[in-house]
Length: 162
View 1 (spheres, rainbow, N blue to C red):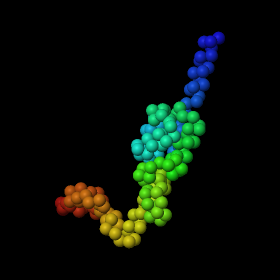
View 2: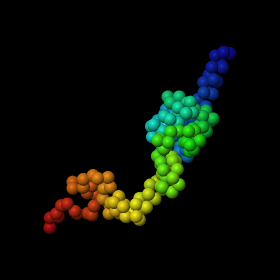
View 3: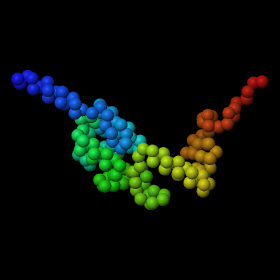
View 4: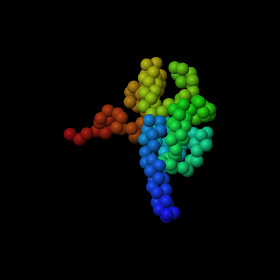
């Protein structure tokens, strides 16, 4: 009888393992460690992921599929609302927001929207970076003589044979 109970316990453990874990509106691989799995969410890097695990007291080497529902809810809340968990402000990806002046951490699609909004604002005020964006040139001081040919007009830099 004792042998019959062991296989049932193993099947229960397998049923509890989740192959997909939903955190921050993203499906994460349950076979990866939680520290690595959180990095698949756009806007979360290694240091932010590590800080979340430390504050919630979750082992970083635990597989994402082995997390309980309560732990998943805590992580999801911490990812969406890091101010509530007193994460250091230097970890946020949007410090001193232009409109609100607050320190916030943005993830997923809103990150792309805010980035595009910033570029549009730079173009509107005609800053140096805005003009470089407008002209399709490099913005951060890279050399353009031999690189970045794909972004320029077709045919510049070489002469065609006739």
